[in-house]
Image (tube, rainbow, N blue to C red; front, side):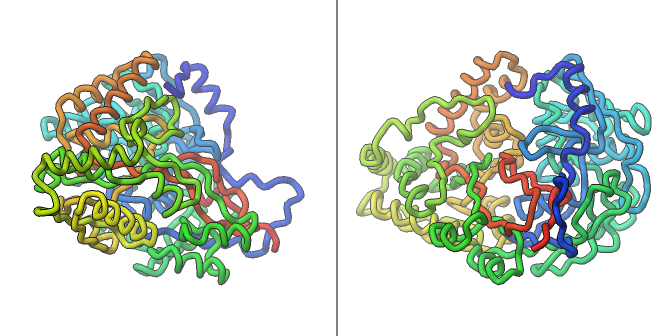
Length: 538
């Protein structure tokens, strides 16, 4: 497994990395007089509360407004954040030493007690956090029982030894635990602000964060404007003076705004414009591999997709090569499993979906559908829900066509805006729903834990005792070879039971203006803090 550091190595790493997550401006660089950047996000953030985030639109903004114990460098390695160093001798008890100059945007010191409060808040069942499972996955003592309502939140295995020493106790060894600390769900929040304003605490003028930027303005569905937090501990290395986020769901509209000079960094671009953009914007088009998988989730609790034969037939009938190469065509790989190929420490075995030609898979799909009672005289009818975006629409049309041609399935395409889509997805109002997962850390469990029964991200509502037991066992597995075998066994269960249909592996496709420097394009988790960016004279 990755990141098996001894206490000495961890402490040394933390001491040597310094402020490598700040803007690194080479000597002799001529900076532009206007240090403003405009970043595109794919939709209006559902919330700026770290425990209320539900998807990709809000995460970049939250990373600018708040900071956890650690950050990531441009390659995805953990570097100091609020914690200036840390140590462990057994990968079960971790001690984080917080920097004394860490401050909230109102000038208050950031203390270990802030993390204790915030992590307890994350696991409090009444707060219904979409990422409460993260504390359990990290192995924090008593997280499972607290989430199940068996213990109060104050029994969570995290203790403030003093203002600048945080002790975290785990129920099992987790060698990659430090990496998890960069996840937004574990960011601290300002207790007095949360308690004073309640649900309104994230509004401009109310929000108190500890990140490199603070929220100055928010116009829903139009923009979010951030300016530097003068109290941030590394404020001296923050070059940008303003960061504006524009929520635009249509990739074509975002690309038009980019071409017009209104946007400096896009989250994506229309796949059908890839070749044209390469020719017209040399040096501005980027498509590195990303730690993420695009998939369709089946509602395993309601007919017709409660039938495993139906789910498996639908998955088999998707020609993933056509989706990746022709519908998309920007370097994406077909996904034959949930865990992407770029995942650190994971060596995948060949899936059933790779062992047969598409013609053979189609034949098996027809047989499965027939066994489930569907055919020319009784075609399967279902709905496919996706959120508004061109790529989602193109993939949905292509898959619906494949299902119709191969299986005679009559598909109703349902397109909804982000918040409505999230509500219906989370409440189970769908037959098939578009979904995706971008790793919260670079290890296979970030993907495979998603389908465990207790995971709040298990939108398929998949329940499989063997799968749950297997994934629980992986949490305490210290033999890397055995761990890889168990992960592959979990993937085999998913292929056979088909609660989801993996479709393609993400690339981090985006457009970046040539004068924007410091973007960590090769970070596998796409952790791109605005404090790393600067604008050269142009």
